[in-house]
Amino acid sequence: MILSVGEILIDVIEGVSKVGGAPFNVAVNASRLGGDVSFVGSIGKDEEGEFLKNFASSFGFNTLLLKEDINRKTTKAIVELKDGERSFRFERDNTADAYLPLIDDSLLSRSDIIHIGSLPLSIKEGKEYILSLIDKAHKMNKKISFDVNFRSDVYSSVEEAIEISKRICLLSDIVKLSEDEISLLGEDFIKEALKDKMVFITLGKKGSMCSFKGKDTFAKSEPIKPIDTTGAGDAFMGAVLYMLDKDKDPNMEEVLSFANKVARECCLHLGAI
Image (cartoon, rainbow, N blue to C red; front, side, top):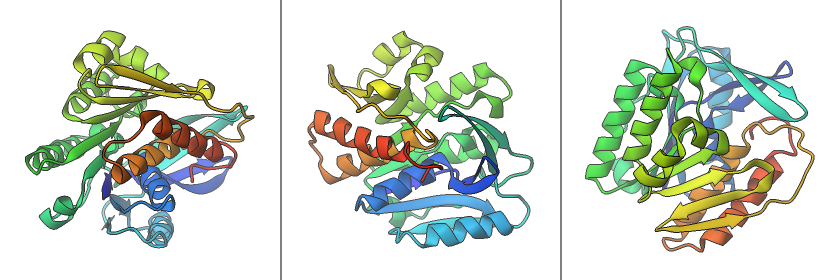
């Protein structure tokens, strides 16, 4: 089973509210593909949170653990589109995403892969929660998956964002990066510090690659004119985790090709899901 943990939020795209949050998008995509998936997140007890709760409840997750925080608001991301490409601005004044509910041992024990979202890492309580979860999961011999999903604007500095991203990468078994994130974290760090990890790299319209056990595997993607690239990386990662959870010794070229197709489909629709 895949257990995805982290932000669930509202994406406001061209004035329209859509469901979002990278680890939630990953969970939905993996579940839609037929995967055994659970999700853990936190929302405000407000109209936006109710919308997200109703949406999440409709997916038939193995377990859905949503904390409704009466003291904090549901997080929003304002998404701006230009020629289908997107940029984000987060509204995080007293928001709930980093104040996650405790996960009991039975849920962890039933999980094979624990996927971590990056947004809660920018707040002290969220970082402590994630680090504690990773430590507990490692003691139970579970695999940790991490999408760097670099968002420096929610940190006090770019340097802080890079430091915590590297730290979680080193604690993970499966890491996903974009080409831009390789530049930010450094090619030497990726090649040397993560050489024993399963590292997936999305290459935009060129496709994707995976470095694992000293072997690099590439898969091209079919060219398209995107409507909205929001959530494409999450669609890719949801497909990857679905394949890895289904097959413990997968053909990496098949994994990448399949994940590229899922990401491509996401780009043909408005919104992350």
